[in-house]
Image (cartoon, rainbow, N blue to C red; front, side, top):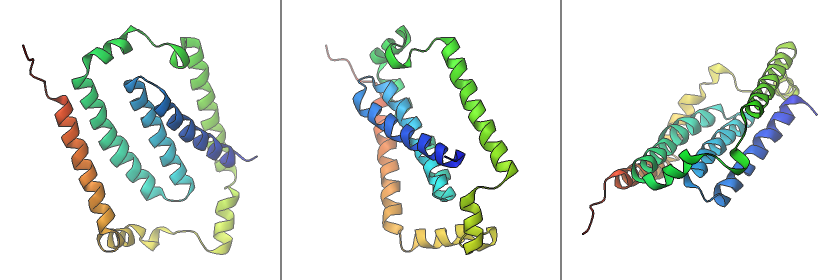
Length: 183
């Protein structure tokens, strides 16, 4: 098994596993942070599909926009649930410091292994794409083509995403406002 296939499986298992944990965990704050992990894993899968523009858009729009709005809305509106988080983590996320260091070192070793393997020889899928002449060159100007398609053929989905972002902003503002106390 090659490193790129292993990394693909790790990203796929991370995306599916964190998505399953999102719907099964009762704590909303942990679900939001798992949603963060899921979105990054999906962005990594987009990179494997050679859709780097969509991966960057995934990170900018969803991780940078929607998820941050959800986190701020939750943190500003729900102080009682935040008290549970401050009491301490329990269960699967309660790692002692030495276990967290081991996990960090393992990820660092994986990163160094991938970088060193790609530095010594390029992966087979890139070599095959070069032989078949199916790879995308920088002079292909794909951003220009994406912009034309986005504003002509895919204008309805583009507008739906903008309405979704506006609804998320309005929902965050609604959740963040203070409720009046009724006596």
